[in-house]
Image 1 (cartoon, one colour):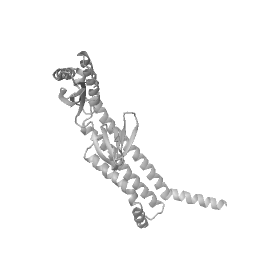
Image 2 (cartoon, one colour):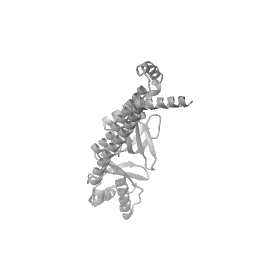
Image 3 (cartoon, one colour):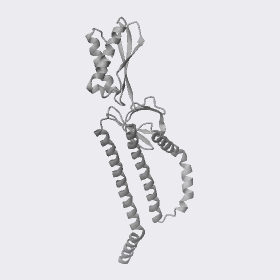
Length: 284
């Protein structure tokens, strides 16, 4: 029995000295490479974020968004290739003939081909999303999905070739498979627009209302805080809707991307106060 244990120990020692040690080194090397790649990606993205925060601009440039998303995708693709090659190397050193796996792999590939169609669709859709710069890290988007009546809305937190991760206004994380995306509405690309419909009684003097709204827009553009968010002075588009009891007058403002909600809230407050001073009730 002692002889058998010694023989077993000798076999394990011999295996470790040959292919076993190589397997351990390959796995450890893959883990270290993964840590290094993740470290480089995080450093690049932190530098992009730092340059954004330290600059005078209030929003990310489209190039910065694209670089951020591209760094995440390239890291994901690189690590996937490395893990695949490591798995092949380990199997080869464990004595599995890779040449003999070609035929079974073809059969298995044909069997799961229909199930893998969705994955391939996700990867191809993600590739075109990145190359066409439809959106990037930090963009506010509304995504219509196949078979869903309610779109997924939120801020882009992560983009890979397979999924897009959003965080909505409630703090919930939404994972969207890229292959199920039907339409993307980017609310923070280049510039945005805040549209405000101001309801006033139908008996109101429309010229007087227009003067009030023009005055609100001019004063808002002169405000030091709001002017940094506005691209030009808010304008009054005129009568948008008319009913027996009330009429809606639309006011629009071009803003920096992603700032239309903040500007819209501030303009509504100013419009409400201005109309109240003139004795006109409204619920903008």
